[in-house]
Image (cartoon, rainbow, N blue to C red):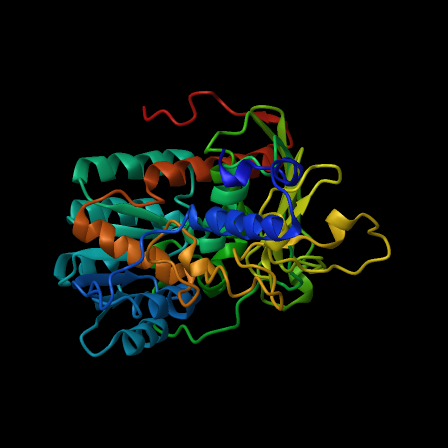
Amino acid sequence: MEPSKVSRRSFLQATTGAAVGTAATLNAFKAWAAEAAPAAPAAGGKVDDRPLKVGLIGCGSQACLNLLPAALKVPGFKFNAVCDVIPSRAAMAAKLAGPQAKVFDDYQTLLKEADVEAVMIVTPLVFHRPMVEAAFKAGKHIFCEKTMAYTIDDCKAMLKAQMAAGKILQIGHHLRYHPLYHFAKGHYIDKGLCGKINNIQCQWNRNGTWRRPAEPLQGVDFKKWGYESEDEVLNWRLYRKYSGGLMTELASHQLDIMNWVLEDKMPEAIVGVGKTDNDDSKLGANLQKRTIFDNVHLVYEYPDNVQMTYQSVTTNAFSPFGEAFEIIQGEKGTLIMAHLSKFVGLFFLEPGVEEQLWMPAAHREKLESPNVTQKPYKEPIVLNGTPSPGTRLEKVAGMDIADLVDIPTATVRMTTYQIELTGFKQCVLDKVRPLCDGNVALRSAVPALLGLEAMEKKVRLEVPKNILTLA
């Protein structure tokens, strides 16, 4: 019998003596923890510093604050070109990238003239399809930020372009690369510790206008790219013609992960309500009125009687588990994942469900609340794969989460951006399929884009069974 499937009661029935029980509990914990551990790298193993020449298209905050710094920590990642319509942003990216980076203000020119094998597209959503198609036509591999594209048809067109080019397409759903999400799925969900999953709740709440600070745009020919004002250039996320708003900027992260939890099944139906709470007329005399929802609530119906609710608001940031969280409720237990919080992951066993043999050695956290009376809810397991700190078992296992995941490159010293870009480089050079390729990203785009459509049309939207078919 597998250690992870031995209940505490059946173990005690099969052994005698407290000492034997403690030893077996410890051994069960070590076996459980080791099951997902990748082979340890050889001592003095060679770092993969093979070079990859890259061009960066789009140098806004996501590029310059997250992706570019992460990529520069990947050995061999070399930016030979950067491009943005705003000169100050391109200059900032070039400064970060190094003196070899040439600056462009037109992505088509970069694709023709720059010495690059691959490009990273980090631009407003509406530009993803034309830029991806042009880059594939130019023979480049592509990393494109999420959401995959502005429409489902655009996503499919990008997939067709990738197939025709025979190049790599990776989409930036970076939570797919998070070590603890892999740990949670492999050790808790896939092994049945949650039991049959019936309900999922996701939230991502903030309190702010979602507007970006003003920047000097003198000399920027914004009309060349379809913008009607400087405000649209800086705050494209607020305008439906360029963006899907919260659904494509925030919700798509969590919908992607929940798709993964549910084995990438498609929802059968979606209903939702979207509202706009921020009054732009009160924020500035010359500001345009936003045309996206900044308050969304949806219900997704998945196969096997699974319901998922989603909420994202911009006028109240209260949350018991940090800015963003996912609650996965099964018949045996509950997983709470919160990638921006202190713990990232917590597991609550349902009262009356027998503990697994390894659970007494697991790291737990006490949650003090007078409203929580049952012990399983007061002492959840912390998903870091280590025994409880301060106990005599703490050092015996000698393992950390960095040793317990199925991504060899994943360590707690790397951000998820660094992990996904390490993977991108390896996929390009070794010609292998990315973890989050276009097929995965299309499946993740469907609930985000159709959820937006359901809110805009104010209907219960049934998802066509052939939604993934490439015409």
